[in-house]
Image (tube, rainbow, N blue to C red; front, side):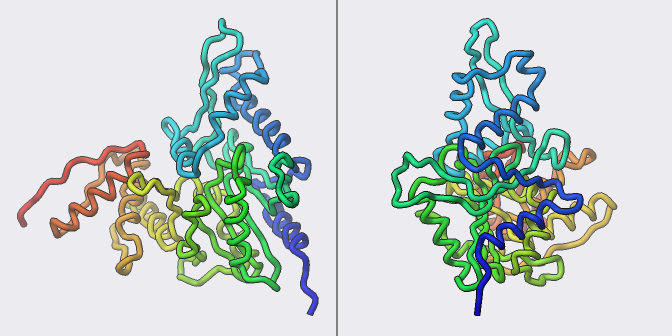
Length: 346
């Protein structure tokens, strides 16, 4: 049996992501890290014209920004992405001292498919040859938001197991490939075309295959082939939501968490019901992440202008302590406050 090459599947995936009214655009010209940085700074200056006030960034100022965006971990990148009121920014001390210090907006958490959010696809980006590896390293497909890599997709053809792509991700991280501009990554996708899964970005020694997640639709039907997965998860607005809105930072474990599909469907169902003034319930099994789901439900309800507080009720003291501890850990890098609990006799 003759198998199609990985390259052909990369091209097919990119064609799918960029066809029709998609927000994704393919940037064939962005094939190394320096070009990615140049593209990033072009977008940064376009989105901060008033702040720059006719004074483009100098090479020294760009280096300041590069240093800020060279994150030590994906968790620290996620902390930065939380931003100020949902806007991730960088600070620049102008080389001309008379211009002072300015803060430039990079990514807007809630500005999905808006005028300031851009979505680009690149493939086969070559890493710096100075790393002196046994061979050149080229990444399969990378998804950029406002010029920064957010989602890394590694593909194998049907002759290989999807776990080979997962092991490739771990190898790249172990070799230090996901540094520099790639240190902003928040999500890994691995696929052998017929089986596709995603996982929150983590360093190689903490990248546990147990957390590889397959997508399911609202009816709990698995979406496993790459074409269907790309349609359901990698389209806009879903891809933006995955890395910006359906991620949670666990301050206690210093880990980035990407929500599972049934959690996302539950959150969105609650949001829709609340807009209509309807009530309802969510039923999840033991160990399915109900506490995390409830936190995100409560958190997202606060984005509705008419709601300024949500109340979480539990029926046991031990559950109260457990939930409060988890909520505090999740909220440590969020923009909401968790009030102390109150015991009521019923």
